[in-house]
Amino acid sequence: MNAKTTRKYELITQIAGLGASDAAFPALLAELCSIDYQTAFEMWEFMLSKHSASLSDKAVCNRMEVLPFTMFLRISETKMRTLFTESLPLQKLIYGICATAGAGNNLAFLTSLISASKIDTADECLQKLRGNSNVDFNELMLTIVNDVFAAYCAKNNVRVPVLNKKQKTLLLDYIGKIKGSNKALLTQRLKEL
Image 1 (cartoon, rainbow, N blue to C red):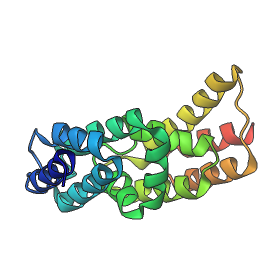
Image 2 (tube, one colour):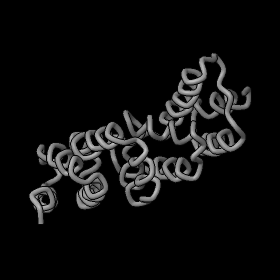
Image 3 (tube, rainbow, N blue to C red):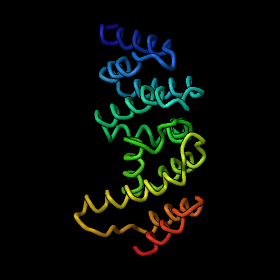
Image 4 (cartoon, helix red, strand yellow):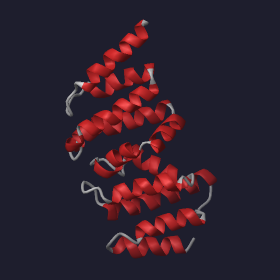
């Protein structure tokens, strides 16, 4: 066994022993990621699952969800998208439990899934987000639709977004599940496209 492999297993052992509030988690995970991206990704899922009861605390989520999510995206968005799409448990942990769901990079990632017509994965994430008791889904749908529109307009240098039928159907389905003034506003905005 070479030194790199030895360090990989040392890191796995160290990370597995960390508590939910341990500030060393992001740095150790980043070091593991530099050795083995997929193993680091699996350890991230393992730690989120292990400390799922603490994910209603935004400080814990910042260390355990926000920083790693950002790191994985920065290193390889393609690998991140592939591994994330294959992991329903991770989707549930991030979008269904975390107090930071629907914000920052996980919001941008969800927006990119919708924009790229990755409808099945986006549907799973939205379904989990809707059931997350730590966030306000009604307000998040407004943010998500605004972000999808803004991303399309920025990418295509236009003022009015154009969504395909699957994208519209997905968004209208979840808009139909919210309550309050955002429901009518968002429904009207999508029907005008």
